Length: 300
Picture 1 (tube, rainbow, N blue to C red):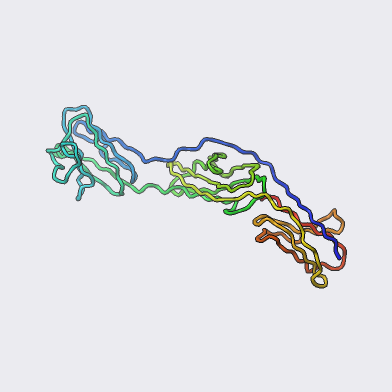
Picture 2: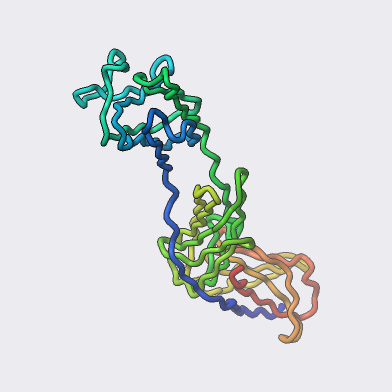
Protein backbone atom coordinates (compact mmCIF):
# COMPACT_ATOMS: atom_id res chain seq x y z
CA UNK A 1 0.00 0.00 0.00
CA UNK A 2 1.34 3.40 -0.88
CA UNK A 3 1.94 5.88 1.89
CA UNK A 4 -0.33 8.92 1.88
CA UNK A 5 0.40 12.34 3.26
CA UNK A 6 -1.80 15.45 3.33
CA UNK A 7 -0.17 18.91 3.36
CA UNK A 8 -1.55 22.42 3.01
CA UNK A 9 0.47 25.17 1.35
CA UNK A 10 -0.56 28.79 0.79
CA UNK A 11 1.53 31.66 -0.54
CA UNK A 12 0.17 35.21 -0.78
CA UNK A 13 1.94 38.02 -2.71
CA UNK A 14 2.25 41.41 -1.01
CA UNK A 15 0.82 44.57 -2.56
CA UNK A 16 -0.09 48.04 -1.32
CA UNK A 17 -3.40 49.88 -1.01
CA UNK A 18 -3.79 53.43 -2.38
CA UNK A 19 -6.59 56.00 -1.98
CA UNK A 20 -7.34 59.08 -4.08
CA UNK A 21 -10.32 61.39 -4.52
CA UNK A 22 -13.30 60.35 -6.63
CA UNK A 23 -14.06 62.51 -9.73
CA UNK A 24 -17.41 64.22 -10.00
CA UNK A 25 -19.83 62.90 -12.64
CA UNK A 26 -20.31 64.84 -15.87
CA UNK A 27 -23.31 67.21 -16.05
CA UNK A 28 -25.22 68.76 -18.95
CA UNK A 29 -23.85 72.01 -20.34
CA UNK A 30 -25.42 75.46 -20.18
CA UNK A 31 -24.81 77.86 -23.08
CA UNK A 32 -25.51 81.60 -22.86
CA UNK A 33 -26.78 83.81 -25.69
CA UNK A 34 -26.92 87.62 -25.35
CA UNK A 35 -30.03 89.45 -26.57
CA UNK A 36 -28.87 93.00 -27.33
CA UNK A 37 -28.75 95.69 -30.01
CA UNK A 38 -31.25 93.80 -32.17
CA UNK A 39 -28.98 90.75 -32.49
CA UNK A 40 -28.54 87.39 -30.84
CA UNK A 41 -24.91 86.84 -29.86
CA UNK A 42 -23.88 84.31 -30.94
CA UNK A 43 -26.50 83.86 -33.62
CA UNK A 44 -25.66 80.18 -34.08
CA UNK A 45 -25.25 77.89 -31.10
CA UNK A 46 -24.17 74.24 -31.21
CA UNK A 47 -25.03 72.01 -28.27
CA UNK A 48 -25.80 68.41 -27.39
CA UNK A 49 -29.20 66.97 -26.62
CA UNK A 50 -29.88 67.52 -22.92
CA UNK A 51 -28.03 70.84 -22.84
CA UNK A 52 -29.65 74.15 -21.93
CA UNK A 53 -29.57 77.57 -23.62
CA UNK A 54 -30.16 80.75 -21.62
CA UNK A 55 -30.99 83.96 -23.51
CA UNK A 56 -30.22 87.05 -21.43
CA UNK A 57 -31.40 90.53 -22.32
CA UNK A 58 -28.70 93.19 -22.47
CA UNK A 59 -29.01 96.77 -21.22
CA UNK A 60 -30.40 98.30 -24.41
CA UNK A 61 -33.66 100.23 -24.82
CA UNK A 62 -35.43 97.72 -27.08
CA UNK A 63 -37.85 95.01 -26.12
CA UNK A 64 -37.35 91.50 -27.48
CA UNK A 65 -38.65 87.98 -27.51
CA UNK A 66 -37.22 84.57 -28.43
CA UNK A 67 -39.79 82.83 -30.60
CA UNK A 68 -39.30 79.49 -32.28
CA UNK A 69 -39.55 79.56 -36.07
CA UNK A 70 -40.20 75.82 -36.30
CA UNK A 71 -43.55 74.30 -37.22
CA UNK A 72 -44.84 73.30 -34.75
CA UNK A 73 -43.09 75.56 -32.27
CA UNK A 74 -40.00 73.94 -30.73
CA UNK A 75 -40.74 75.95 -27.55
CA UNK A 76 -43.20 78.59 -26.41
CA UNK A 77 -42.03 81.96 -25.22
CA UNK A 78 -43.82 82.71 -21.91
CA UNK A 79 -47.04 84.70 -21.98
CA UNK A 80 -47.00 88.44 -21.22
CA UNK A 81 -48.38 87.83 -17.73
CA UNK A 82 -45.54 85.44 -16.97
CA UNK A 83 -47.49 82.21 -17.35
CA UNK A 84 -46.85 79.42 -19.88
CA UNK A 85 -46.81 80.58 -23.45
CA UNK A 86 -49.43 79.63 -25.98
CA UNK A 87 -49.27 79.25 -29.74
CA UNK A 88 -51.41 82.38 -30.05
CA UNK A 89 -49.06 84.79 -28.27
CA UNK A 90 -45.80 84.08 -30.11
CA UNK A 91 -45.82 87.51 -31.77
CA UNK A 92 -44.90 91.18 -31.44
CA UNK A 93 -47.44 91.68 -28.64
CA UNK A 94 -45.43 89.36 -26.41
CA UNK A 95 -42.02 90.89 -25.68
CA UNK A 96 -39.85 91.69 -22.65
CA UNK A 97 -37.71 94.56 -21.47
CA UNK A 98 -34.32 94.18 -19.80
CA UNK A 99 -33.54 92.69 -17.33
CA UNK A 100 -34.98 89.37 -18.44
CA UNK A 101 -33.81 85.89 -19.35
CA UNK A 102 -35.42 82.94 -21.08
CA UNK A 103 -34.28 79.33 -20.68
CA UNK A 104 -34.92 76.25 -22.78
CA UNK A 105 -33.51 72.73 -22.47
CA UNK A 106 -33.23 70.78 -25.73
CA UNK A 107 -34.13 67.12 -25.46
CA UNK A 108 -33.95 66.13 -29.13
CA UNK A 109 -31.50 66.56 -31.98
CA UNK A 110 -32.10 68.90 -34.91
CA UNK A 111 -31.73 72.46 -36.10
CA UNK A 112 -33.99 74.92 -34.30
CA UNK A 113 -34.28 78.40 -35.85
CA UNK A 114 -35.74 81.28 -33.87
CA UNK A 115 -36.25 85.02 -34.09
CA UNK A 116 -37.18 88.15 -32.27
CA UNK A 117 -40.50 88.80 -34.02
CA UNK A 118 -40.28 92.51 -33.29
CA UNK A 119 -36.92 92.86 -35.07
CA UNK A 120 -37.06 90.07 -37.64
CA UNK A 121 -37.07 92.65 -40.45
CA UNK A 122 -33.72 93.86 -39.08
CA UNK A 123 -32.25 90.34 -39.29
CA UNK A 124 -32.60 89.35 -35.63
CA UNK A 125 -32.49 85.61 -36.19
CA UNK A 126 -30.69 82.75 -34.50
CA UNK A 127 -30.30 78.98 -34.66
CA UNK A 128 -29.65 76.30 -32.09
CA UNK A 129 -28.08 73.19 -33.61
CA UNK A 130 -28.52 70.16 -31.36
CA UNK A 131 -26.43 67.04 -31.95
CA UNK A 132 -26.62 63.64 -30.34
CA UNK A 133 -24.32 63.51 -27.33
CA UNK A 134 -21.11 61.55 -27.81
CA UNK A 135 -21.23 57.98 -26.53
CA UNK A 136 -19.64 57.28 -23.15
CA UNK A 137 -16.48 55.20 -22.89
CA UNK A 138 -16.56 51.42 -22.65
CA UNK A 139 -14.92 49.78 -19.65
CA UNK A 140 -14.51 46.14 -18.65
CA UNK A 141 -12.84 44.47 -15.67
CA UNK A 142 -10.46 41.90 -17.11
CA UNK A 143 -9.17 40.58 -13.77
CA UNK A 144 -10.43 39.07 -11.55
CA UNK A 145 -13.35 37.15 -12.99
CA UNK A 146 -16.87 37.88 -11.74
CA UNK A 147 -17.81 35.43 -9.01
CA UNK A 148 -14.23 34.37 -8.34
CA UNK A 149 -13.41 33.04 -4.86
CA UNK A 150 -10.21 33.87 -2.98
CA UNK A 151 -8.73 32.57 0.26
CA UNK A 152 -8.34 34.91 3.20
CA UNK A 153 -6.39 37.13 3.61
CA UNK A 154 -6.60 38.08 -0.08
CA UNK A 155 -4.27 40.32 -2.07
CA UNK A 156 -5.97 41.34 -5.30
CA UNK A 157 -4.81 43.06 -8.46
CA UNK A 158 -7.77 44.58 -10.29
CA UNK A 159 -7.23 45.21 -14.01
CA UNK A 160 -9.50 46.93 -16.53
CA UNK A 161 -9.62 47.77 -20.22
CA UNK A 162 -11.17 51.06 -21.35
CA UNK A 163 -11.99 52.47 -24.80
CA UNK A 164 -13.65 55.62 -26.11
CA UNK A 165 -14.91 55.89 -29.70
CA UNK A 166 -15.50 59.64 -29.61
CA UNK A 167 -12.41 60.82 -27.78
CA UNK A 168 -9.94 59.47 -25.28
CA UNK A 169 -10.09 57.88 -21.85
CA UNK A 170 -8.58 60.31 -19.37
CA UNK A 171 -9.04 58.38 -16.12
CA UNK A 172 -10.06 55.00 -14.75
CA UNK A 173 -10.96 54.96 -11.08
CA UNK A 174 -10.98 51.73 -9.10
CA UNK A 175 -13.12 51.12 -6.03
CA UNK A 176 -13.72 48.29 -3.63
CA UNK A 177 -17.19 48.91 -2.27
CA UNK A 178 -17.24 52.68 -1.78
CA UNK A 179 -13.51 52.95 -1.03
CA UNK A 180 -11.37 54.45 -3.78
CA UNK A 181 -8.22 52.44 -4.44
CA UNK A 182 -6.59 54.56 -7.12
CA UNK A 183 -7.04 56.66 -10.27
CA UNK A 184 -5.14 55.71 -13.43
CA UNK A 185 -4.77 58.37 -16.13
CA UNK A 186 -3.21 56.04 -18.68
CA UNK A 187 -2.95 52.34 -19.48
CA UNK A 188 -2.28 49.89 -18.00
CA UNK A 189 -5.34 50.47 -15.84
CA UNK A 190 -4.93 48.55 -12.60
CA UNK A 191 -5.21 48.82 -8.84
CA UNK A 192 -4.07 46.68 -5.93
CA UNK A 193 -5.49 45.97 -2.51
CA UNK A 194 -4.20 43.67 0.18
CA UNK A 195 -5.13 41.66 3.25
CA UNK A 196 -8.85 41.46 2.51
CA UNK A 197 -10.61 39.49 5.23
CA UNK A 198 -13.39 37.02 4.53
CA UNK A 199 -16.46 38.63 3.02
CA UNK A 200 -18.30 39.56 -0.16
CA UNK A 201 -16.84 42.45 -2.17
CA UNK A 202 -17.91 44.63 -5.07
CA UNK A 203 -15.08 45.76 -7.35
CA UNK A 204 -15.75 48.70 -9.67
CA UNK A 205 -13.95 50.51 -12.47
CA UNK A 206 -15.21 53.95 -13.57
CA UNK A 207 -13.85 55.23 -16.89
CA UNK A 208 -14.00 58.97 -17.74
CA UNK A 209 -13.34 60.42 -21.19
CA UNK A 210 -12.28 63.85 -22.38
CA UNK A 211 -15.95 64.83 -22.80
CA UNK A 212 -16.58 64.25 -19.10
CA UNK A 213 -18.69 61.17 -19.80
CA UNK A 214 -18.36 58.13 -17.57
CA UNK A 215 -19.05 54.41 -17.66
CA UNK A 216 -18.95 51.95 -14.77
CA UNK A 217 -18.33 48.21 -14.61
CA UNK A 218 -18.75 46.29 -11.35
CA UNK A 219 -18.25 42.66 -10.41
CA UNK A 220 -18.64 40.70 -7.21
CA UNK A 221 -16.02 38.42 -5.68
CA UNK A 222 -15.79 36.49 -2.43
CA UNK A 223 -13.03 36.02 0.10
CA UNK A 224 -13.40 32.93 2.31
CA UNK A 225 -11.57 31.25 5.15
CA UNK A 226 -10.36 27.95 3.64
CA UNK A 227 -11.50 24.70 5.16
CA UNK A 228 -8.66 22.52 6.41
CA UNK A 229 -7.56 20.05 3.76
CA UNK A 230 -8.36 16.65 5.21
CA UNK A 231 -7.77 13.46 3.27
CA UNK A 232 -10.19 10.59 3.11
CA UNK A 233 -9.10 6.97 3.34
CA UNK A 234 -6.78 6.15 0.40
CA UNK A 235 -7.20 2.88 -1.43
CA UNK A 236 -6.20 0.92 -4.51
CA UNK A 237 -9.46 0.54 -6.42
CA UNK A 238 -7.82 -1.60 -9.09
CA UNK A 239 -4.31 -2.80 -9.87
CA UNK A 240 -2.19 0.32 -10.47
CA UNK A 241 -5.11 2.65 -9.71
CA UNK A 242 -4.86 4.68 -6.52
CA UNK A 243 -7.79 6.77 -5.23
CA UNK A 244 -8.51 9.15 -2.38
CA UNK A 245 -10.79 12.09 -1.56
CA UNK A 246 -9.96 15.36 0.17
CA UNK A 247 -11.96 18.19 1.73
CA UNK A 248 -12.10 21.52 -0.08
CA UNK A 249 -13.59 24.99 -0.10
CA UNK A 250 -15.74 25.36 -3.21
CA UNK A 251 -14.29 27.90 -5.60
CA UNK A 252 -10.68 27.64 -4.45
CA UNK A 253 -7.93 25.95 -6.44
CA UNK A 254 -6.01 22.84 -5.40
CA UNK A 255 -3.03 20.90 -6.68
CA UNK A 256 -2.32 17.20 -6.12
CA UNK A 257 1.37 16.30 -6.00
CA UNK A 258 3.45 13.12 -5.70
CA UNK A 259 6.92 12.43 -4.32
CA UNK A 260 9.09 9.43 -3.59
CA UNK A 261 11.37 11.19 -1.11
CA UNK A 262 9.47 14.17 0.42
CA UNK A 263 11.96 16.48 -1.29
CA UNK A 264 10.97 16.56 -4.94
CA UNK A 265 7.28 16.95 -5.69
CA UNK A 266 5.61 16.51 -9.07
CA UNK A 267 2.16 17.97 -9.80
CA UNK A 268 -0.32 15.41 -11.05
CA UNK A 269 -3.52 17.48 -11.24
CA UNK A 270 -4.91 20.94 -10.53
CA UNK A 271 -8.52 21.94 -10.20
CA UNK A 272 -10.94 24.52 -8.91
CA UNK A 273 -13.17 22.80 -6.38
CA UNK A 274 -16.79 22.48 -7.42
CA UNK A 275 -17.76 20.16 -4.55
CA UNK A 276 -16.69 19.25 -1.05
CA UNK A 277 -15.10 16.75 -0.92
CA UNK A 278 -13.30 16.32 -4.24
CA UNK A 279 -11.68 13.06 -5.34
CA UNK A 280 -8.49 12.13 -7.14
CA UNK A 281 -7.57 8.97 -9.00
CA UNK A 282 -4.11 8.05 -10.28
CA UNK A 283 -4.46 5.35 -12.91
CA UNK A 284 -0.69 5.07 -13.32
CA UNK A 285 0.19 4.46 -9.71
CA UNK A 286 2.41 1.44 -10.32
CA UNK A 287 3.85 -0.57 -7.45
CA UNK A 288 6.59 1.72 -6.15
CA UNK A 289 6.14 3.47 -2.82
CA UNK A 290 5.16 7.14 -3.11
CA UNK A 291 3.71 10.00 -1.08
CA UNK A 292 0.83 12.25 -2.08
CA UNK A 293 -0.09 15.68 -0.86
CA UNK A 294 -2.86 18.19 -1.64
CA UNK A 295 -1.96 21.87 -1.55
CA UNK A 296 -4.26 24.87 -1.65
CA UNK A 297 -3.08 27.01 -4.56
CA UNK A 298 -2.20 30.65 -3.83
CA UNK A 299 -4.64 33.34 -4.87
CA UNK A 300 -4.17 34.28 -8.52
